[in-house]
Each structure stands twice: as structure tokens, then as C-alpha cells.
Image (cartoon, rainbow, N blue to C red; front, side, top):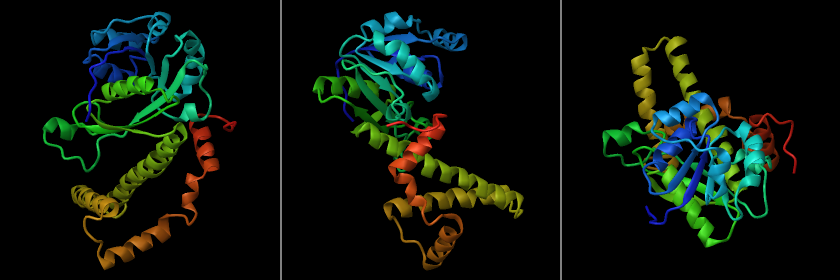
Length: 287
């Protein structure tokens, strides 16, 4: 885990929203000069209740080194169309999810640098030591996490600004891994939402079937599912212990019964485009 003593001028757009509050809570703990922008009355109230002064958007972005667009994907097209033309030359426009950036929905300028960053969230294998770390499953409060970032610039100074900002907004951060915007879109949503989050939801559906269809006491079903989920992930992802021969047979039955033979097509570019178009409520992604 590295830190920087440099401070920057940071503007947070959507500072009173769900992600904006998380970002702002962490930035308020730093020495960076931060301007908080929020349009909705409810968001403005949350921001001022947190003791943070509001700044109008034009003033906030005028001299910002980096502008954090902490607004929903579906709002990014309109918000960047309004504000990117007002950024100073050489500023960084940072979004917190790759979908809109990869889909080409964001307003660009040749002299404004596009960047994307997303939290990895605390690893299931993180060695937590305090109650606060155990309670922080999302990250950004007490449990250390990694982050993934992309920046369309080779300038080390610009990367330093992004790195410092990412480490601040997702703190505490262990490491920042750099990829391309397309690679970040392949990770999020394909790897972690289309696959991992779907499996998490499927586990909950299976638990519901065990309890309400099979009639197993809920406490018993939860206990065996939670414990075996840890074993399954430790064995499957790290090879901590081999699965038993009987378990391997049951796993193969599960694969045959649940998984489609062509499921890996989701990693193709055309499938990524189709997935993101659905997420962004578009007919298609134009290239």
C-alpha cells in the first residue's frame, strides 16, 4: 500500500448520491481541496448534513485537476455533455464504472483526459483483524481493498493524480491495477456481475428452495451453505484442498443440469456489447 503527499483540486459531481457520499466521506479525510456538487434537494441535504459545503458545478470544475463523476450510468451522457466542455485543459474526467465510457456515451475533448476507476471490494480471502473490517464487506470504510483503473494518457503526472484520487476515494487501498477501458468493461460487468453476482443470487435461490420447497430448517440450511460456500471458493479459486471424488461427481451433475455448454460466449466482444446495451437501455452500442 503506497501513499502520496501531493494534494490536488478535486471536484465531485453527484456528491450527495449513494456512491457520491461514499467518495465524499473519504475525500473529506484527506488534504485535497475538494468541491462538492449536487443538484437534487435530497442529495444537497445529505451533503450539508455531513458538514460539507456545496459548490455550483461551473465553479467546481473550472480549476479542478480531476473531476469525479459519481452519478449513475444512465445520467453520465447528459452530465458529461454539460460539464466536460467547462473543464480546464489537461483536467482528468473520472467515471466510476466503465460501461458508459466503453459504449462511447461520454462527451470527450482532445485536451481532457478520460479515466475510469472501480473498486475491487475487500477480498473474501482478506485477513481481517477488527470488527470494523469484518463488517465492511463493500469496502471504502475499514477493510482494505484493491482497485482497477484505466487512464487514456501516458503522462506520469496525470497517472499520479488519478492514482492519488483512487486511493483516496476507495480507501484503504492496497493496490491499484491498471488496465484499458475495454478490459475494465470485460471485468465489470462480465466477470464480476454477469458471472459472480449472478452466482451469488443463484445461491440465495437455492437456499430458498432448500427451506421452502424441501422443508429443511432455515438455520441448518444457512449454516451448511455458508460453510460450504467458503470451502467451494477456497478450493475452486486457490486449490486449498481437493474436492472429494463424490463431490466431483455431484459438481459434474450440477454443471450438466445448470450451465449451458456455450456459456463462455459471454466473454466475446459482441456479447459484451449486447450486455452493456441492455444495462444502458440502448438498442445497440455503436462503434
